[in-house]
Amino acid sequence: MILQRRVDAFAGLGDIMIQAAEGKSSDLSDGLIRLIYESHRTNPWFTRENVQLALASFGAELNSAQLNKWVSLYPELENPRIPKRIAVVMAGNIPMVGFHDMLSVLITGNNLIGKTSSKDDLIIKELASILIRVEPGFASLVTFTEEPLKDFDAVIATGSDNTSRYFEYWFSRYQSLIRKNRTGIALLSGNESSRQMADLGSDVFSYFGLGCRNVTKLFLPDNFNFEKLRLSWSGFSKIGENVKYRNNYEHNKAVAIINREEFHDFGFVLLKEDMALFTPVGVVNYEFISEERFGDTVRRNEDKIQVIVSGGKHTCFGSAQKPKLWDYSDGIDTIEFLLKIN
Image (cartoon, rainbow, N blue to C red):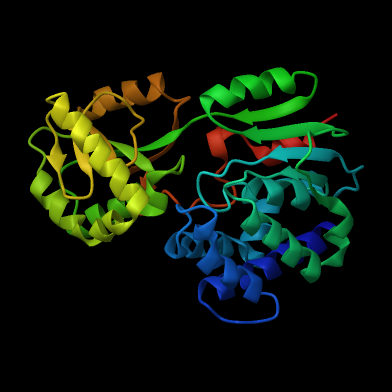
């Protein structure tokens, strides 16, 4: 299958993902629409809104212009190559988190051996099924397995810092791309508009804050106006109606009270002054810092930071969970990795 056929097929899949997110019924989109409303039964974190958000975000990137711009960065993709068998171990923290790896393997003309997370098994497989209906040439290139992985040439695996150590051991004989825990941070000047602060709320609360691109730590100037932030985030209070999120928020609030920790309580999220980048669900940490010290902090923690949002030179507020096709996880170019497999 030539590169342009692969690109056209994924552009077609993107159209169907957007149709499903918008609730537009068709022979190809109906399965996704059903999963939008049913995924929460197997994973309570996969609410209708979160599945729609994932489909719409990925679908917006899967258009001919973006796909062609992306693949044009790698002229060697035009050359005939012997396909490799690439095992992909997918995470399941947010909907479709393994989709970009599946896309990368297939757009490079390789064979996918997918091992999905039990938390995100249905949507990924439905997308693969639709892709094959759009372009039957993919039928022989896509395999999913629940058995131990075998007969592959290289592996891409995503997990926690703990599971990554096991991945490194299990896959030590193979060329591998292994990802660990990362998170998002935000730098505020104190001069942000209410709109910018509301957009920051999307970076914090989308997917209940469970994604590696969600913002979990705020870096603030002295005398920051928390009341302005509270008002700007009031539109996200509905998140507290989700039982699993609410239980986490109330548990962490109780722990903070017992430990006599100071915090700002917005009624659905706690803001705590803490040096840690990672936080439990329902908590956002903050730290007062100058822009000079912020740079030093970023350099010290570059292996833990997935994205930085700000009103300046970094990712724009509200865009943390809307990465471009070339915004690779952990800053590792997945296509370059695939092209260099022996």
